[in-house]
Image 1 (tube, one colour):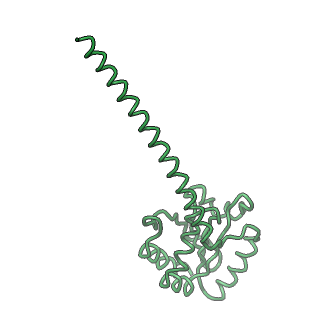
Image 2: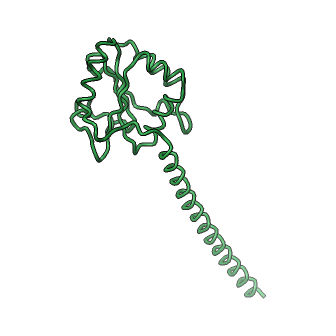
Image 3: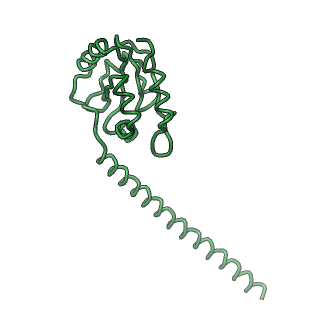
Length: 183
């Protein structure tokens, strides 16, 4: 009798282990599916968003033109460094464009430039000139230039994040701080 009880206990233990392994495999498949679903949703979101970065553009020439315009208009320049591959870069651009109080503030107080960093065009000379902030902070990263093109501030973007987007208050505070600085 003891032997039968012992065999049943061992059998139950083995069955429990097999059941746990089966559940673990199901959970792993759910995670794989979830990752695939998230990737698909991310790609769909990227496809919908405006692509403000131009890897074919000569950024040094464009920025020189912008500096001339900044001097004429007495405005600072926001350089948003990143690329069309970067969902957070695209989200930030869309966020500013779709938030009337931010868009009007930026249009009134700044000139805005999207500095491309991608395998197609790394704009190495410009990034080196500004201390390669993308290597330090990731993307997007913001470089504030005064009207003469002198760098006066570099800002990483994670402090602006809120959920899957950005905080209006934090972004507005950032814009306000650098609108009139060092003109």
